[in-house]
Length: 428
Image (cartoon, rainbow, N blue to C red; front, side, top):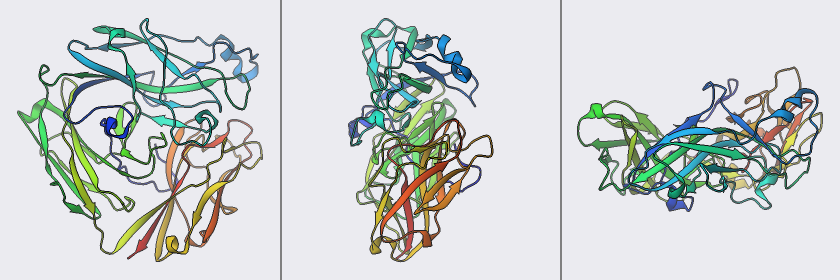
C-alpha cells in the first residue's frame, strides 16, 4: 500500500525465505518448498479478527457486534505433506489494541503456537504498535499436519499493558509453507548467473538466473537480497533477507519476472549506504506452485561515485506512539550531527502507520520539530508505508522530534515499531 498524496519509495526490498541465516526461521539455500496462502474475503478488504475469549468487557454502540463475535473460526488449508521435512506459518497481522498479547494459532488438534512478534523493543513488544507483514516464521510440528485439508484457528489473549480488558487484533492473511527433500521431490532448478560473486554495483543492479528445462513450466522468478534498509516487514530487524508480503504476494523485493529471459534491473538509487557486502538469490516457482531457492551470490559491494544515501534510525520510539481526540502523541525522533547533514541535497522520512487517514474533516498530522510535515496520508483503519519529503530546513543538528496530532474522535493514528527512518541524499 502507498499513499496517494505523497511520493513513496520504490518497491525494492528483498523477499526471501532464507531467514534461518538471520535467526528467524525460513528457507535455506537450495531448499524446495510449497506455499499456500489463506485469504479471507475480497482481496481488497481481507482480514479476520480475534477477540480475547475471556474478556468481561460489555460492548455497546458501534462495538456491540463484538459481544457476539465468534472466536477461533476454522480456516481450512489444503497441504501436500507427503515427503515433508518441516513446515511453518508466516502471518500478516496488525497487532491490534495496544498491549494485546497471546496472539497464537493452532493446527487441527495441536496445541496453541505463538505468532512471531517484534524484536529489539526496550520493553514488552505488546507495548508498541506493530504490523508484521509476512517476514516471520513459526514452526509447525509435522505430526500435527495431514495430507489434504488442515484446519487452522487463531486466538487472542489479554492486554498485558494499558489494560482495557479488550485484547483484539487482525489477521490479514497467513501462509503455510511445507519443505521437502530436494532429492525426492521433482522441482524447478536454476542458478544465478548475474551478478557474479564479488561484483560491484552503484545505483542499479542487474540480476539474471538460468532456469533448467522448458521456460513455460516456470510461473515466475523472484529476485531477493540481504542488506540494510527500512524495516518494511515490521519485525524490528533492519539487516536481513528482507521482504514483506501483501496477501501472500511478495512486496518490496528486487524484482519479479514471469517470462524469459529471467532477468531484471533493480533500481538501487534509494538503497542506503551499505556497511557490509550484499547477497542476492532467486526464488524459482513452477506452475504447480513448487518453489526452489537458489544458492546466494555474495560479497557484492556498493560503489557510488557522485552521491550517497544516509539512513538515520529513530533512537527514541515511545510506547503507544499515537494520537486522537486532540491529544498530541508522545515524542519520538532521532539525533543528527553536522556530518549527517553535510552536502545534503534531499531528504525523506519513511514511516509505517496504522489508520493514518480519516474519513471526515479531522486534523490528522505528522509533525517534525513542531512543524506539520504531512497530513491525511496513509489508510483509514489499515496499515500503510510512505516516504514523506522532508524540507532540509526542518532538519537540524541535535535532537529532531517527531509527534502525531489528531482531532479524530475515533481510532488512534499510530506509528508502528521500529519507528520512522530518515533517508538523506548527499553529494560526494
